Structure formats: structure tokens, C-alpha cells
Image 1 (cartoon, rainbow, N blue to C red):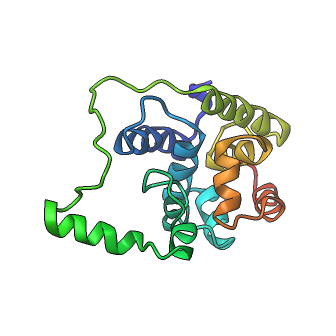
Image 2: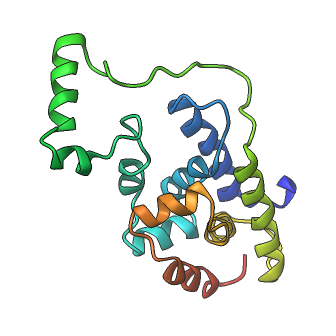
Length: 173
């Protein structure tokens, strides 16, 4: 299947591995793929940005502070930014960042990521495209409605119908 990947889809998969490592994950999951799609330069990144979903917006809703909900904590008087700044001042920059294990080996894909790649191939075939690009990867995220990546996209304000329409209206890959 990877032989059918266009350059931007290959770059997305490579970037997903980097994102997973940076977050200390042991596997590449759907959210890592979505973060990588948004950080790219392909048609999916354009569709996301045009729809108001930026890489920063996704990262902010990705559960960076150990999955703590900043808005919920702020409602009870806890300011995560102030706590992080104080910890950085007292213990050094990045004191609250999760330390990830670095490994030279490739990280495996989890079940959701594998399914995303499989559905991306199906989307390319359905649209009559010869290659799989980042647009097909994002279409796969949109089809996996029970996936963590789809949930992250919704939390970041993504409109699945609008994104699907934008991706399906583009010229064939």
C-alpha cells in the first residue's frame, strides 16, 4: 500500500512518528496522524486551515497537560499556565513536560492508525485517484467517527461535512 502514497502522505506518516515520539507514545495512533496532517503542506492541511482547524488548535486540544481540561480547571480557580510558569521558574524549563523514551526503532501503528491507512486507500479508490495523499488520510479520519482523531478534530472545531466537501471537490490525485 505504501507504494501508492504520494509525497505528502509519506511525509505525513513520517511526521506522525515524530509527533508520537515527542509525546512519549509507544505507538502511532490516529491523533498523531491528524496532528501530522495538519502540520503538512498538502490538500488536507489546506482544508483544515480553511476550516479554522490549525495545528496549534489541534495541539492545544490534544491533551498536552496530561489530558487536563484547562477550561474545567479554570472554572474552579486553577490556572494551568500560571502553574506551568511557576514550575518552569522553580525547576527549569519544561519541568512538567512528560519525558518520552527515545528509541531509534520505528514505532508501530495502533489499531486506529492502521484502520485510517486502510480507509485512506479505499477513499483513493472510491474517488478514482491513482495515489493516496493527505486528503485521503483526512477523509479516512472523517469516516472513523468512533476514533480518537475524529474526536480531536471535533474538539478543535472541525466541521466534518465541510471538510469532506472541500476534499472531494478538489482535482483527482
